[in-house]
Length: 139
Length: 417
Image 1 (cartoon, chains in turn red, green):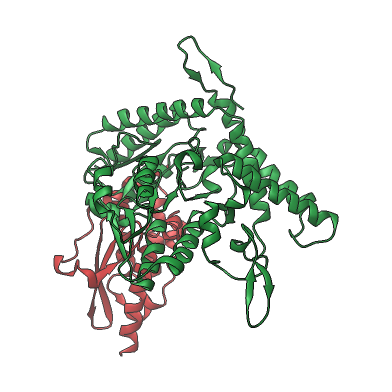
Image 2 (image 1 turned 30 degrees about the vertical axis):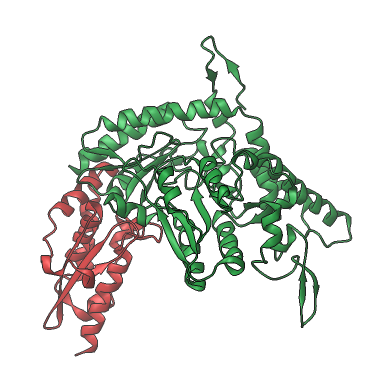
């Protein structure tokens, strides 16, 4: 599936939730089930510092695709990371670099990317796209 | 406004609903739920009288101060200087020229750090702060200490978040040039014994600056009673506008210190060779001041003048007690900052749960709290945590709101477990 197809799939899933509690319970579940980043990558080099929560991101090149693993010290941030990874993982580098992550706004989580939240997610997305761009450029 | 009513038990009654009616924002909603605002330590809400004072000033009284020859400017100058006198009376300063208008506590501390440092700090000198300071009372001193080769000495705290006066005494020496200490800790709630520290410091001729940012909204702060040499505080934390703050300095100190910023208003005579400076307080007020802010701050002080300090304090104590007792009943909750003398805020962590997650889930229940390190990273390091959830209370909060906070935390913990 393409990046946009996966995004639409997530938007459809969220349409089922009646209230914010259900939505966040789902995000927390995703957070709990996020495949863990290899412990060796949870270091300063892979840390994306936020004022509120920390995010660790590791990217591996597989041909022209990028494989991501990540983690955070906050559960809701982890849940959102799980969705970002679902959308961008193993996609062509060029698609990652030019992606428009509209699903975040559509499922009502844009707040989590605002400057004030400062939870590392905004920088994580930037970083993911940078990896895409770097691999695309090295073709 | 609440009136002072003595009950049979001689307790001071507090009509919180009457107070709440003065604050229009408390009738709004967050995420579709009635706003429960528990972040007053970051910035307090504004009563209608402050909002009206600002709007009325811009609608009918605005002109630049201290220079116009026309009636409107003279009237604006009178209002601005009237605000200064109101602040003088509020903190019981001896002279109105000991009151300098600044942007806020941060600017006030930077002003003293830079002006004091330039005149007095030599290599090897020491400036003393505590381990519970806000970044605003750490970084300005680090900057000037680096500039002049001075050393920043940190007074340690115990597990409850208190300093020990004996330790302060031991750390003082003939290289100590100034002690800058928070009156009430924003992250822990600890109320420091300012007067005791001042007495000790003055015996050795060391001046003391008190960071009063958290103090002025919760009780009387009397600079002559405390005998502090400098007091820094912000309007927005005491129901006034943002962007206005006060540096109080004893006349003898302000006369001695060189200007901080240069510009209009602060000069007496300027030539390209040399500039002579204006008298106090204008020497420290370069540029057009925050006239509207000062008028809004005056309205906030007038508001506080009309309520009972005893009533407010006993109400806030009840809020603190209720929050502390109920939160501790939730498994895994640990309160950070358990000082004997404590202001009405609760900083806490829940075992195994990140503060950001709790804060997010409280937000969706209409409850505004602060999470994170509260601009006190070194303090968080001491407690071995990265941050806390902080609920801070003000005169307009209710016991029902504390119950909502507790229920909200319970719900969040359940969702996250």
